[in-house]
Structures are given as C-alpha cells and as structure tokens.
Length: 217
Image (cartoon, one colour):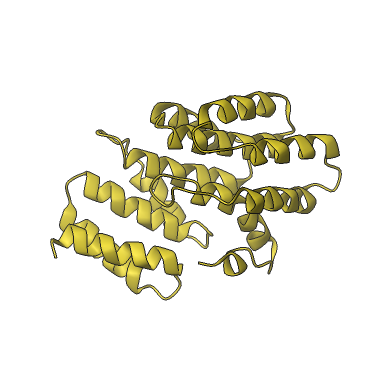
C-alpha cells in the first residue's frame, strides 16, 4: 500500500489510522524499516485532530523523539519515549508507549514489548482504536514466541468489526494458528485473506506467500 493510499484523509477513522499506521508498520513481522519523517507528520496530524488545546512544546518534544530513532539505537530511544510517556498527556503518552513497544520488539525484547502492549490494551485510558491496535501488535509479538498467549479470541473480535486493523488481526490470527501447528488451517486463512478485495496490496502479497508456505507448495 502506498503512502498516498494509506494516509488518505476521508473521515475521523482514517485520520486516526493515518497516525497509528506508524506503529502498525513498525514490527518485525510486517516490516523491518520505517519512514520517520512520515511518522512525525502523522503524529502531528493526530494531535491536530484529537486535541485543539494540545501542548505545543510537548508535541514538539515527541516529534523530536520520533526523528531521533535510528537502527541500532532502539533501546536508548525506547527509554527516552518511556520517560516522555510518564509525564505526557494521555493521548500523547499512548502514542509514545506504542512507539516504545515497537522499538523494544524490534530490538528483540518481546517480554518488554508485550508488557507495554498489555498496559494499553487492558487499560481504559487509551482510545479504543489504539487499544485494538495494541491487541493486534500483541498478536504479532506472540507469533514470535515459543508458547504464545491465547490471543485469538480478542483478535477475532477486531477482525469481525469495521476496524482499520481487521486485516492485520486476520493476519495475526493466521500466524498464531500456524504457530499452534495447525498449518493447513493457517494456509486456508491466508488464502482467504489474499483473495479478499479489501485487503491492502502489501498484505495480499504476504498472504499469498504464507498460504503457499503453510500448504507445503
């Protein structure tokens, strides 16, 4: 999916999706790289849409932290984001925590990433859209673990509703199903995902490859 397609501004849901796309794409399963300039712009637009009375200095600080993320320095950036989240307003704190978790996941700290995602997903202060995103990210983390936690029911709830994360949830369910040893079932899930006309083009490509992998073709 191109940036122009992903970041189109149609209604409130897509404006919010435009921001959190940074966190959806910053994962070991979906991608290994991230466009930080796009992330900073997305965060800026989120703050405009969600709070006209935001603290400008705090927003600038958050954008600077995003711009300071570099490969190999994930741990230091994650620590800085954790410190920022501890004193930020709730909306900005949630975005900072999502970024921190993605960085810790990228650095291989799956336990630390899971703890942060759970803090967001299981709490009540974050926007429901962002809580759902945290659940989806937990699904991707769990698919990398030897004994993944039982997240499929929560992911199925997201996949069944009109959520911008419904296709990501389906992908995570497929990965967890394969991790559980149900390769044929996972292959069917990915085949169905690849055939869905609404699925993002980049996900369709992954789904085709995973369907072939798990079907043994």
